[in-house]
Length: 317
Image (cartoon, rainbow, N blue to C red; front, side):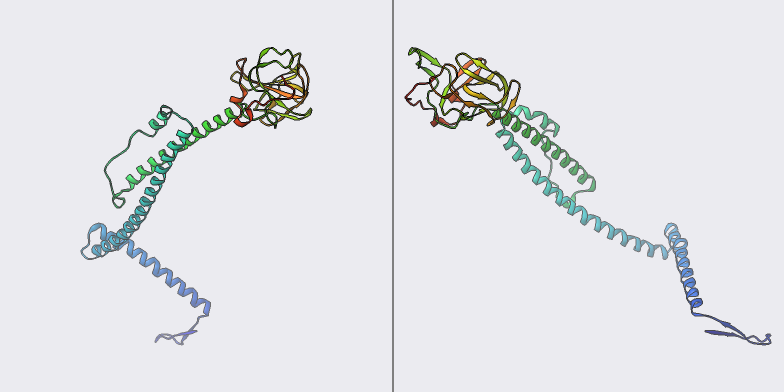
């Protein structure tokens, strides 16, 4: 592009040569100047007019600002209502969890007085007027969220406590001799009978499980090996301590697989059936003692049909 400049006083005409990149640079410079000028105009005229209350400009500015504020308020209100609705849904779920927690606590055997500290933590009873979600303010919503957070902590504590109670009950059940030490029928039960060797009336302090020599003997419950020794009457005798004064005895063994102090679990192989000691044939003599006093093992083992006393060709002790 060429621009020719002429003047009456000039002797000759001047020609200015403009290349394309110069035109682009000039256009960019012009646009920048326009943006700066508009920004300055808005800052120094419109804002000043709004502050000082100019008759016409201030009204225009107020309308623009009012529209922007209204749009922002509508946006915030829509989001606030959505959050309030979501908070209500979460609160309904927490109420269901509360009912479920009370049911679970009842199943675990927890007493109502045990839950009093948790109820006190939750702040006791609750109530108040019904306020629709559309009328909830931001501060009220924050208070609701804080209450939900506290309620969630309460339910977490409740379920943790219930879990510990269930675990405690499970551990206690694992330490109670409730599984048969030998897979087979019971020969001679607990109580008075004719002694198989002397023929006189005597107390049989356990259950006899007739089986072949070498038949596996399994721990009836978890515990610690209290003793593993020879006894004149019991033969090779193994005793397990299950805690709380509860012990079990496994007598007339042919072989013992665990040593004193070993920790065994329910169903673990601990010995083998034999015919050692005061015995008339291969069998396991199984006893349950509480504080050193013999108890009927049938009260602990959970197989009632297996405890009926059956006649034997050769009585065993």
